[in-house]
Image (cartoon, rainbow, N blue to C red):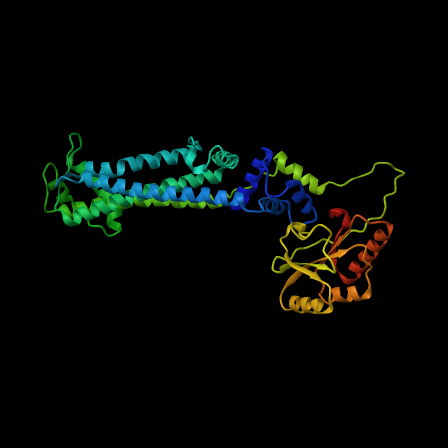
Length: 436
């Protein structure tokens, strides 16, 4: 979910005129020639805008705060379940049904409420906890808060909330089970049951139905005679079977149903993966800028022929190196940064024969994609072409111009285009590169 969160956070901040580490307009233009799908380009754009990973760090810290809050909540639920059951079983004489309802009553009601909400798709009100967002007056903190609020009623987030709720309730039930088990191990209890309206036969059948599943799982359960003997009498003889039924009921009718609900919620969370809404005007404007073409409607207009570079494919499995031929682009030592939306490892300038040989040998020893900066006004002589050819075909030529560019530069550009086509190199067009 992290790429979507970062992309959405950049959207919210950009709409609020936030100042980023990198200019979003420049990054958008740099990604124009990146031939990935629009969704991948939008995620990459957000990563490049957050060049120093300040926003990503804030999102990570926010997620860590939520995780620690959930850990503490789980501990509180376990302790609460343990202490509640401990308090309920302080007396040595226990009414079986009172103890059972005290342990499972609220859990059963909460589970039925959850089932009703799921069946009728009812939404519960969200709660905002200010300290989760750091400095709430900070623009980034407010944007993260809005991001969580906007996602609150989306299917993925709603099922994630169900996962959290069931996980916490399971911790409470585990605390109850542990407390009941420990007390039954170290104390001698006597069990009874009472009823004003129900007959012996009715209660015998009811307890038999209740004991059916625990008995299948190996728990000892009271017999019909033991059930009758415990009515209005504190039965110590069959106390072990009543205690076993209590533990079995807690497991079968408390923990297992809640565990099943938790599993369903996890499955639904994976089914409803979060998606970026590309129909928002913000994303549509960016996508249209990438797809926009200038068309002249005059019938008598004949455009100059434009040489199109073949589609540039960035090799994901390769390293990405950037090298300048003979000299760096003027006033731009960071020329390679974010070209085509890719991070390039700077290999500086190659000029001498030994430097070319070393670069060719190093590149041949491992999968490498090279971005080679060449001054467009430089003539594509045989020596330069031969050295470029020694680097293989996985080369992208970055042709740059300077303030002294003239008609002769355009002629040499055409020559470079011919050379690139002949040797199978792709190139970055000069009109998409900032003149320096």
